[in-house]
Length: 111
Length: 150
Image 1 (spheres, rainbow over the protein chains, first blue to last red):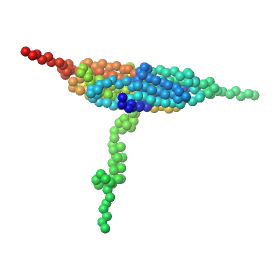
Image 2 (image 1 turned 30 degrees about the horizontal axis):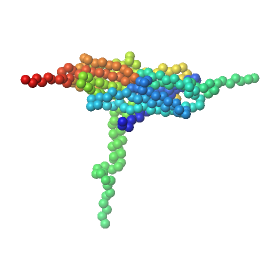
Image 3 (image 1 turned 180 degrees about the horizontal axis):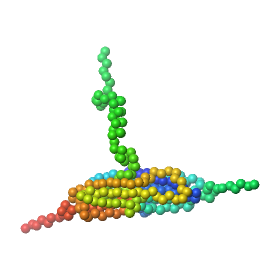
Image 4 (image 1 turned 180 degrees about the vertical axis):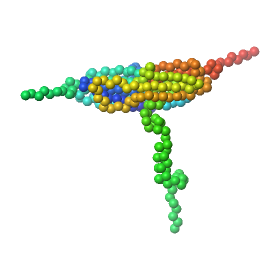
């Protein structure tokens, strides 16, 4: 097999006070062709873009082919056991909970 | 002793370096500013076009777009795909740290080959990829001709 192209998917990172949400655009990837691996605080997302094989039937090509790959480092503030993933319309959404002790908290003033 | 003007190998033009630079800059400003290289790299979504014996196929990457936000029209062999990619709803008190995802409207028109049958078009949206299948006219499909040997 020839060397595979790596596509870096466009992403969005946002958070609320309880959760961090990560969205990655991976058109052509179904949930069966997606791998999410966590190892030593490293979150690695790989998705195989499904392309039909037209051999000589391609008349014009602009779409990128290959494999989507993106990596993130998980900070101590997030609970890596809480990661949830959903694939919808070519967008992967991952959510991870922020650990209780890392959440902003109010300090009461005494006196 | 004669002095011979030094020229870069393969540099036969009478233009000076400065003129060449000016040309490059002019090219930049002459470029169409709607070109995807400059703005909204996704506002003109990338398409692939292919054929087999029976059909033409168009593939367009439009992650996050709803079926109801796509408008496909076909007339006189021109296929127009219009759509809108809506921003995903913002959760209350959400902070966005980093965003590379593009939102907005997009449009692309594609002239179909003469042998496309514009009355026989199907469209399907799967995993963020729009697939439009356009049948070939019966008359142009490859067919087997039986040879009779007497």
